[in-house]
Image (tube, rainbow, N blue to C red):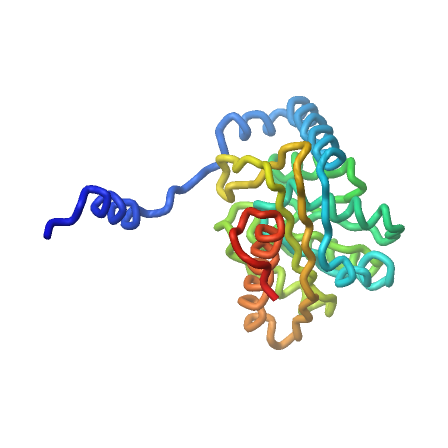
Length: 256
């Protein structure tokens, strides 16, 4: 019996390689010009602030990160790059509950990284220039200094260039070198759009429902950082699955 047209089309779709997305040219052009980049960053920051205010948020696992907000023990707050536009809400909630420990977001030294730093700066977040994969000795020293001064570091281990949801070794190496725990986190909004970027970044819409999830901390022994990299990836994926399921986007139950 010959396969049906639907069967053939399904096989064709399955055999195609996944579509690769790149950062739009207009965005690269925009962030290349300092004045335009600054204006656009302020606009995006205002939009996100409006979205955060009008979204009905629920939070899960906040007790896991209390050592980084009230306990005086710094940590590495870790999440995938695609969730970045929603993650400042975690800092906002911590500030509302009296958090006193500052948090710095690791961003690249390229124009898009500086744009991100400017956009999230209005939410009480600082920035440290570097990369989870190619930060160099200078950025590593800066992060070590900030951690010693009691600052948290927020890291997207698949940034700034991807591949999406593939963690660079830097996150495990930094945790092993400093001895501070990694706090996997994620967020989701029921109404959002996926951007045409390499990570298919999730950009939330206002007047919806949102979820922020924190998972149990991960401590990385100095001699076993490489073996812990898959553990970190699995925890980040679990945080995303939990946020999606709680927000009604995943079609399943949150992981245990």
